[in-house]
Length: 433
Image (tube, rainbow, N blue to C red):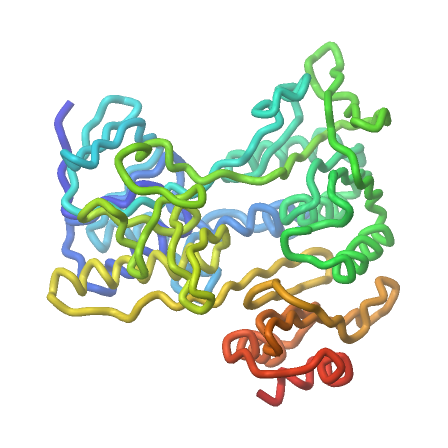
């Protein structure tokens, strides 16, 4: 097969790839210089839609509606956008070999792609129950959610199992968002996770108590402190029951699993320096190999604010790291410099009529403020994290745009405060900064 050659290649076709392409265009990339190679069959899209509006029973989101960069208020980049800019969008093409020394990528079909500068934007893949040897984990109607194909299969199952029963395995992002959307589809939901409360990587017990109470009121049955250890099936291979470690057996027409993800770094193992499960980069997303950059989920980068190295799995960082890397590529070509990446960690979620945002770092002492009663009509509440007498993190449920901006600012500025003061003033403290 003929070898294809490009000045720049982005490997991976997710959020980072789409935002990197936009920045390449802004920086004046010439037609024919840039290629995006993606194993997915569609142009880059805003992945968060898959666990939210894509699964709505009415008015569901569909492509081309949520191609990047609409998620951040930008232009929607349809396949035609890439064509107009002279960017090669090479879809349904999985790279199976990367030789960084010879600057060559090889696809599953045996095609070779040469590059001068590579941007690794391979993202993450879901952890599967079969990875842990769970019995029956490959039964039909057990779903994971990462790509649009996964979401399409789940949509079909929701149609086929109308008013059926689902078990959601996992109490993190996917578990919470999917449980909500399954209830909107009038599916009975049991949510199972081993931890003492939901979303333990971010939520404190106080925050989690609100969401667990709220979900219970919406008809989600939460089962904590146990895990799925096996699945029984109907004769046609479809899942019928979920067996839990504590001996309980749950009926299920559909199972949705969200037990975490791992960065897709295998192609580059042994060729590039790694740290904390990702590819180690500097503040410009340059790796240990010249002309190779890594962005999004796969990058372990210096988090300047906290003077430490971290890997962040979130759409906000996927967008911003991609833009930073491309700016750095062009700056280095022109003998210029760009500012170091100075990222404020940001997470958010929407489910039912809830919407929360978190900024900063969830370390230190905490103070909960506002109305955290799950039965309340307003349910506006939040939490601050204080370390060494300074606010380092802030969380807010049902905040206005101005209030959300205020908690972002407070997490960035890190003003001095006491727990008593914050308990008394609540959101008004942040609004004054």
